[in-house]
Image (cartoon, rainbow over all chains, first blue to last red; front, side, top):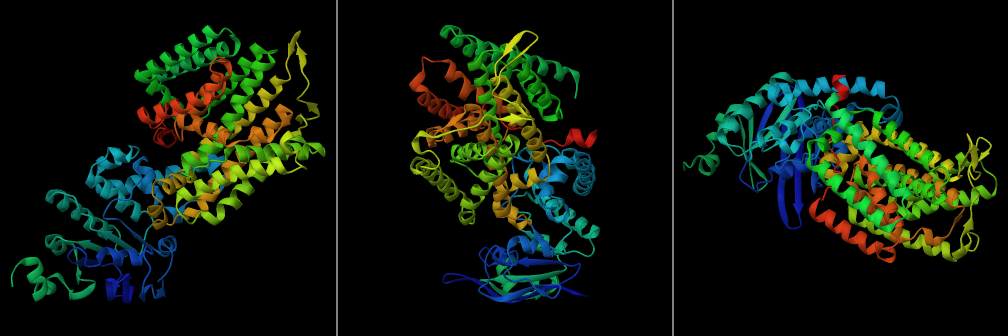
Length: 257
Length: 380
């Protein structure tokens, strides 16, 4: 297995608070890694550190062996990492199609001629991308693909999450970060959404995924490798079966001392 | 586009044109009040009824059919008036302010960068026209130069502040607007408070300051300016509408709605804001140069902070980000007060109340911007 992503001794401090403490993680290509831990254990901060939204206090992050620590968010995108957010960051006044296309910065022409003047050409580009977006949406639900030009604010929570994932997928990233995608969903919706995630993985065998989750059931289903965080430190790592045997995890999550 | 929507939409446009013509021609104050009341009732009914939605959808999906139609109607109105200097000047002013507001729409409506110095950049275009006209540069080049200079100055003043949040760039535009006016008043080479004379436009060797007669009708020279303003407005409208319906439009919206989300998806937020400011100012500068040529004379008092607010009130009343709303809103803000001499000094007060009412009861404006639709283009 090839190593895709690694972090070495990543530490993030906010004033006196250590949100992430010397975290070292290795992610192999084509694997789903689960990141588990109670609220405030530094999961989202770790994602923010990877995507350049908050600065590293020390340590470094590498993708494909290249150091990417300290890059601006937009540069992180261009090396091949995209993400979703726990609280959705979609544009409510735009259509489903527009929202997904925001993720396609690495494949569009932004010249004035291409966009303003040569409209025939633009239309061909548009039709091509329309097919692509429709195919992505269709993989989640045919119903969603039918609503490709509906405004985002007319959609429910699970569909919005799906669109966030589509926006992250259309860039064809090497690494996809999913920040608690089941937050705010009913158990049924969560189950449905996890099927979607497994489908995504099937369709993109080379892509790696890191998923933040609270629910142990979800982790059991989707994660091939789990990392448990508490107070910004890694407390356990391994397959799901391995980590559930860890005494700390048993106490915190399964209520068995 | 289905026929059922097309015909009512055409009827509404026809009514709007006939109404605008009436408003321009009538002088009796009671008649003007009556036509304002008729328009208010008509807009209310159209907005309530299905035809209103139909009009919005037709405009949204129609390609450039409707803007061509609007341009044709404007020229028809001008041709009917043909020798009324004042009316034609008002019509040209509405178009020129409409052009300014296309620029402000790119900045505020799309990229979310508010520009409180619209009148100052308009003035940069105007003073460019005065200075370059005096040394005999061709008019169309002067228009271009006015736009470029406004774009350049706008880009330079906004550059140091753009890394911070939006409010600061709004503050710096206020500061610039005030500084610009003081600068003009103390600068003797630019005429000081008395201002400067501006050469009229010459296009293809033909002075736009000359009236002419056609088929035995005397035609005011302002007719020429209506034509030129309508041509520039239409061109800017078509290009800006194309921009809105393109990848650039999506990016500008993304920058406005959520800059963190935009940055995480590889969008260079600062670069797109500068782009919007410069392109918007380019349009505003051209409008200013045209205005100066038409007026023949400009002074610092033409470009005050309250003029900037007037320009912004057009896009707020019309519907932020909706190009189609600019002409009706420019008529409300520019034309109606000019015709209603009675309200005179109270006009700013009335605008303040109108803007407050719009923000309270229709925060997206009288004609809100529709969701971008690529459906027609994809399915064609």
